[in-house]
Amino acid sequence: MAPKLHVIVCSTRPGRIGPSIGRWVQEAAHRHGRFEVELVDLADFNLPIYDEPNHPRTGKYEHEHTRRWSASVAAADAYAFVMPEYNFCPPPSFVNAVNYVYHEWTYKPAGIVSYGGVSGGLRAAQAAKSLLTSVRIMPLPESVPIPTASKLLDEERRFLANELHEASAKLMLDELVKWSDALKSLRTE
Image: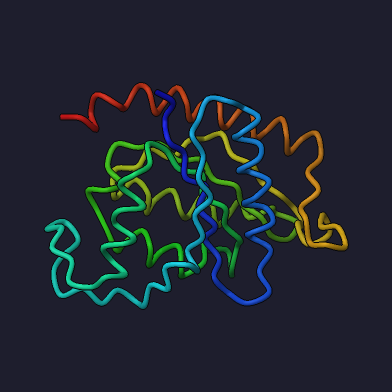
């Protein structure tokens, strides 16, 4: 059975381009052919700033939004986070979503598709890796940085990937398969 990859759109702000890039990542993963792929949009969960009375490690969730998010995170074997860079950092919605649950993330690999201005969101991606390791996610060095992403949209706001984006995505997906397989025994203990 193919591992399940969640492509997670991390920005929730109005006017965002994350869903366009997320759909491209989803399509690239389908073409890759080694995953069962699902596009997950953080905006659909409407997570408030962390509001659970218990620590996430307990798994005792009182709110329906947390239970829905927990089930979504737990269902995946690997993640591809699609994130913009805000002030050299990942978006607050990403930080909040990661902090909502704990065990659901454990021993799973993640790739990062970052976008922004000239840096392509690389500073946000690097900052995100520190948070991801704290919940025992294995962030991969292989990533897909997209500089000046807003200039790569067509008139219908579809993301127009170039050869470098496609090659980077393939490399990241190849590594996600390897790491997902390698970490599987740790997830089943």
